[in-house]
Amino acid sequence: MENIKVYIEYVSNVVEAVGVITIFIGIIYSLIRYLISLNKHDSNTFINLRHNIGKSILLGLEILIAADIMGTVVTDPTLDSVFVLGIIVIIRTVLSLSLQVELDGKFPWQRSSK
Figure: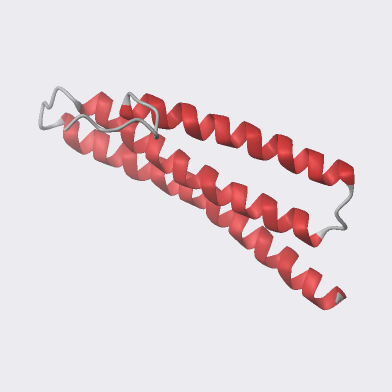
């Protein structure tokens, strides 16, 4: 059973690293697209930059939440560790929700007006 915990902890660390790398690569990619679009004199370049960065942060936050859940499952689940996980998930969910509202201009559960 101890060997499984070691492997799950390793996987959790890898997933956490993937989340951070996702955010980093997304920001770099967004900045490169922004710099390229500056030459085209597009009026929406800054808005597109914000949307692209926001999307990469959203994806990275979702991956980090998954890593936190895996990391907590590996440890001996005490009331303190579950409480800390709950707080982390709530904070990251609120951040994800606020980014989603900022990007789309509406809550995810609202119908699209097409």
